[in-house]
Length: 290
Ligand SMILES: [Zn+2]
Ligand SMILES: [Zn+2]
Image (tube, helix red, strand yellow):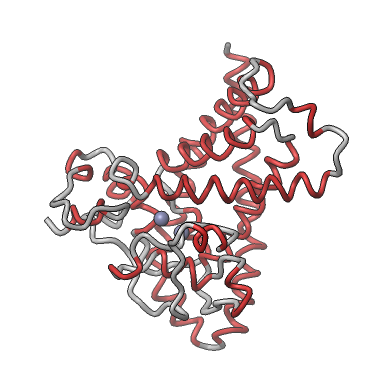
């Protein structure tokens, strides 16, 4: 048992180091991109976002320490259940021998379909208080992708991974889905006005996802996908009136501190609705007006 615990801690430590190592080149990439798009305005934008960025980094470190080992355990448990205990609905051998690229693309496509519905679930009363942490960033940048409550991190990981494993998809497809969601996730959270023009009908643009974070009732319950906007179009939640200039954030009462953000989902008041006058996924936000 101590050996197993040591292995879990080693695995989560090395995964955490990989995340940190990835932050520097990713940060430089978005700095260069921001400078190209915004020119000198990037400096004032960075100053304005400094406090929220600091909080995002605190939440990132907290998750690496607290959630990292749990993710290692859960990933091993899921692989054990679906690969060795017969929980998969499709035998993993079905995919063996097929070309790797189409199988990985299928994993990304199914992964985003799953993510779409999982995200809608996160906007229900039960999961909104933890998901609200992601939405509480009023100065959204690429680092907002790292701003998730531990509960939100765990439910996302379990749901997204379980669906791919229940279909028997190989590890490469699961990894491809995780990598695309991670790095494309950075792009759609970046402070860029891009709508992608006609391509926005297929892919989620930074403007589209920024509207998802808008503190504007007209934008509530829209734009849930991460990679393919076709899912929002198919299920009637697509809304991109142009680059997003609306204020961002939530009306939930959450202190802009690590304790305030993490503690919110553990307070009963976060789960109470004021009235059912505006039922729907963002009902959690109605609470804050109380
Ligand atoms: Zn959301
Ligand atoms: Zn987001």
